Length: 544
Image (cartoon, rainbow, N blue to C red; front, side):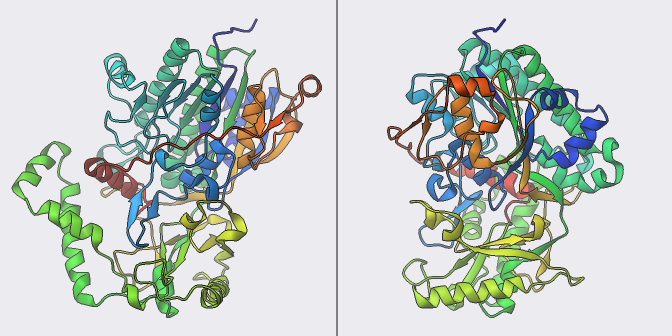
């Protein structure tokens, strides 16, 4: 018999989970809970965004609209002058998420650890911020007093937003176990207390381990750390399913998949070699390296001593500002540049960028075509094709936030290559690497793929269907399962093939022109918060 206090729908997010790993593990009996959901329900590939990157992908999944409308593209966005980068968080999202629509209807939701939900959304129900949290009490929970209650009950919140590296820079899977256990404990405790209609919990460890240990997976399979993390997460999925019982619907999703990294292209070095970008003279580079050295030294100082170091080095704050302002690029003599790690190319447009030189209109379009054509000719060290496609932003996205998307999106072949855009350092070679936390014995060997996964099970689901879905289909499907009308503005579809035909006959999907839900105030990180986020993202290899 159904327990009315349990969520009507529970969504479990497994960041970067891929059937390429899950299927052989399920075949060997290593993932009994995920395997059971697939046997009793339906599942398949969930195609991610372009690029398949955490900020954009999760934001599209929870809103059902593209980045040109929700406005979150990468871990950073360019400022009004076009050259400085600021860190993005959940408050930058300009389109309503599923939980905003439920709150507008007077229904409760419970959120735990969803990426890009800092500050914790002020919804009817509860929320614990995710990947973008600054690791301080401010903005960590809603209601705000929950953070103190959690501390008294469980200790500090174990955010799974760093690589699971222990002493000596080695992988320590006990870090994954502790964070996953606490996340389930929090979800069950808060769900019992608030009784939400929707419970949504996300685990990040699958992404972190594939970046560090994909070659171990290829060599050792079920004996690898990647496989062990999947087993750890499957056990915690089982705890949630046992608590729910079989009478409630469940969806398991990943924001993107995973696979091997074959190489890294330094796009700014490539642009310089093609004559599109110029670097500043060498003297400025030397001063930049001196400032970088000071900050690298500080990273190795124990956290408890850093405040003392800052007191004794009063110029450190000034050096921080100098570091933030510095660029290796000679902007007045540059026509195009890149930023990020996935292939973002921006033209230096007159009237848009502070020192723009490319005329809008015909020159802009001609330059985009020229750069795209040359990128498609790029070959790897062994002559292999590196770039699958180069997209103009308006070909993939539309909406009032389109200006936040780069002018050109370089889609590397199977995303087995990455495209760095270092703006604060110069590289003479176009062949580069992703740098991660100092002192680690691991390197960055895995990357993202378009092909994530989706599994649906429960009384509303038609079993045995192989799904082929887009990430924008998740939000409308969630709303249907929650017996809510689907707003016509959503770009995805209800996954009708996965729904019990008898249910569809009784309750076909309803569509509505939804009332406008105003986006909240954008809240940038405070200086101390920004430094914490910067250090974490650099350790994960997402920023230079």
